[in-house]
Amino acid sequence: MKLTLSVIKADIGSIGGHIAPSQALLEAVRRHVAEQGRDLLLDSYVSSTGDDIALLMTHTRGVRDEAVHRLAWDAFLAGTATAKEQGLYGAGQDLLKDAFSGNVHGLGPACAEMTFDERPGEPFLFFAADKTDPGAFNLPLYLAFADPMNTPGLILSPNMSAGFRFVIMDVNHTEGDRVIELNAPEELYDIAALLRDPERYVVEAIYSRATGEQAVAVATSRLHNIAGKYTGKDDPVMLVRTQMNFPATGEVLAPFALGHFVAGCMRGSHQMPLMPVPLGSGISYFDGPPIVTCAAFAEHGGKLTEAMDAFAHPFWDEVRHRVAVKARDMRAQGFFGAAMLPMSELEYTGITQKLARLDERFTVRGA
Ligand code: 13P
Ligand code: 13P
Ligand code: MG
Ligand code: MG
Image (cartoon, rainbow, N blue to C red; front, side, top):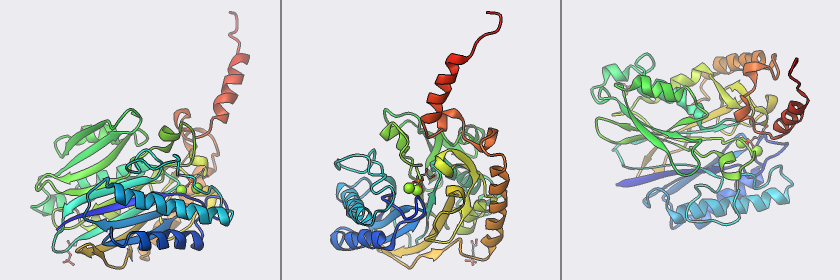
C-alpha cells in the first residue's frame, strides 16, 4: 500500500505568552480534524509542543494534496476562533495569508510529508521542536545518517552500507526551492560544509541509496521570508522512518543527547541548547530553552498505534539537567557575542533602526 504521512503544524495562540495552547484550543482543532477528516484521512494524531499544534495525518492522497492541506488550514482557523474567544496570545500567529490557495506552503504553517510503500512493520518517529528553526535538525541528521561514530548500522548493516542521499535546501532563496543533492559517504565533506550553516542550509529529505526509499522529511519554511518581518520562529517538524534499511530508532535519538546549541529561544534571537522533553511539554525559562519532542509510532494500513514518548525515558533526565546548566551558562553572558544571533538573523527591526541612528553620529578622526 502507498501511504502518505503528512504533518502540518502552526502556532495559533497560547496561554501566558508563548508557553502552550489551551486544552480548549487543542480540542477545537481535534474536533475539526475528526469531523471533517472522516472521509479523507485513515488516521490522525493532534498534539502540541510548546505553543505549536501539529496535525499528523495518514492517507493515500500523496503529498501537497489540496484537500488534506485545506483540512489542516481550516482546523487552524477553527482553533483560532477559540483562541480569540479565550484571549490567547498570538491568536492565529502563523496564519500569514488571508486565503487558502492550493496547499499550505508559503501560507505560514510548517509542513513535512512523505509517500512510501508501507513495510510489513512500519516504525517511524515524529519530531516537533519549539523556539528554534529547521536547521536545528542538521546536526542530529548528519550524525544519525552519515557518522558511524553515532550509527554502527553504517558498518554493521548490509542494507545501510551504500549510504544515504541528502537533499539540502538553501532557505535564504525566496524565489523558489533552491536545492542540492549530495551522497554520503563520498561527499561527506561537502555535506558538512553546507550543514555547518544551519540558518541557511537545511536538510529537507534523506533517501536510502540502497533502495531509493525516503527516510526523512523536514519542514523547511522560513516565516520571515513569507511575512517579510518577524512573526515568530520557524518551529520545525520532522518525520523519520527507522529500522531495516534505515538507522535504528536508537541511532536517530542518540544525537539529541548532545543538547546542541540552536538558534531561537527568547524573541527568536539567541543561541541556546536544545532540550529533549516529554510529549505535550510547554515552554518556560527565557522563552525556552528550545525544546524537541519525539512521538514514536508503528502503523499498518494507515492506522496509527498509540504514541510512545521517546524522550520520557529516565535516561533523558540527566540530559535535561545538563542542557539546563548549559542554558544558564550561555545566559550568563546576556547579549554579548555568541549568546545572541548575528545581525542578519535577529528577528527584530528595532536594533537595525538603533544602529542606523548611531551610524550618523560616528566621526572619522582626522578626516
Ligand atoms: P532487537 O534484537 O531487540 O530487535 O534489536 C535489534 C536492533 O537493531 C537494535 O538496534
Ligand atoms: P514562537 O515562535 O514559538 O511563537 O515564539 C516567539 C517568541 O518570540 C518567543 O520569545
Ligand atoms: Mg507563539
Ligand atoms: Mg512556537
